[in-house]
Every structure is written in C-alpha cells, then in structure tokens.
Image 1 (cartoon, rainbow, N blue to C red):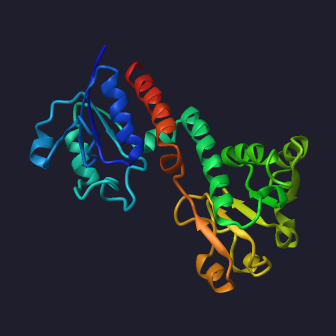
Image 2: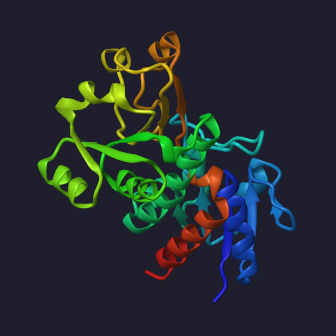
Image 3: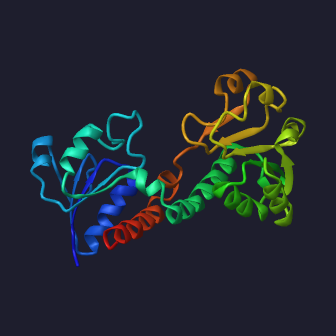
Length: 265
C-alpha cells in the first residue's frame, strides 16, 4: 500500500527519508527541505491546499519553541500553522520519534561513533594511549563505553547509582562514583559527557588539565560551562544531534521503520 507524504522542514535525515519513501512507491512532497526529484511546495498558500495523508516534521520539531526547525531552507512555518495544516491528517513530529524507545536506542549507535570520530579528529594522539571518561551510564553512555573499550587505553565511567556502578565494573570499565568525580577528572585525556545538566561546572573544570578534550553529547545548551572552559584553555565541543550529522542514511532507515509502524497501528 502506498501513501501521500508531506515532509516539513528537518535536516539531511529527512531529505534521505523522503528519497526512501519515494523509492517505496509513495507520493512525497516537501516544504522547507528541497530534495532532488521530489516536489518542493513553494509557499504557505500551496501548503494549505496540500492533500497529503501523512505529515512528517523535523527532529527536533523546534529550536525556539515557536517555529519548525528548517536548517536547510530559508522558508519558515510556525508550530501552530503546522498543526492547522495537519488537521485531519496523521502528523508525526520529531518529538514523537525522540520519545520512541526503540528508535532512541538505535540512534545511540551513530551518536557513539560520531563522538569517537570527533575525539580522534580533535586530538593529536591516539585514543589507544588515552584514559577516557564517560559521564553518565544511560543509553548513550552504555553504547559509548562499549565502543571505546576496544579502542582506548582505559575506559572510566561515572554514575550515581550503585546498580550502575556495579554494571560498569561487571562490563570491565573502571567505575567512578559521582562524589569522587573531582578527584579523578584531572587524570583524564578525553571526557565524553552524556548528562543533560551542567555537570562540568567551574568547580570541576578548574581541576582539569587544559590538555583534556571534552566532547559534550548533551542536548543544547549542554553539560559544560563553556565560558569557564574557554577561560581555562580547555577545548570543549558541543556535539548534540550527532546522528543527523554523521550517519543520516542509517538514521533515516530507523525513521522509516518507525513511521511505517506508526501508520500501521
């Protein structure tokens, strides 16, 4: 069975998704995301007259809480307008996708690989000579530790819960309880943060070597006091939303699977 899709905004993940949906025999149109061989709707008036059955919007849905995220276009549309246009249609937004457990878990793979790629590009030494620390043992932290284990000299992981610390040790990583973070962070060559609050504040940063690289994977604004890091000469890179940057093709395949599952419910 084929469907009529309308993709509004989004990054390269949705551009590639549009091609995949078209290849599957669906009708696909876009607004705010021009894709070769797919009709791009030119204005809001035409958008209002669109007869699509399923509307897909960006990941994340918005960066400012008002307008749909459209990094590949000069066009714009408010979230309220998106809702009106989607009235009576199936609307699938980035927020729904981000809240899907299976898709979120699969997205940790390109996130972890992208983080390691950044660390390799931004250091002048090999990770096989490094002590690396992962802050947080959630979905991303687990996959990142797993990928680092075969690369880095020593893999440390910070966690608050006793259960997580036990799992960290069981997997062969070196556990660091949160209360012992400050006394250990000075030993690290690379720190990967997955915790979505400012865990690397001025009191922690001041204990770090200015040769340590920080790769911050937390959502914007991240988990680092960037002003303090800059003053201390510590390189800190905010690397949120990595799946769409480092592996848009793989990620779009996850999205396609999620969308078909949603339609068939």
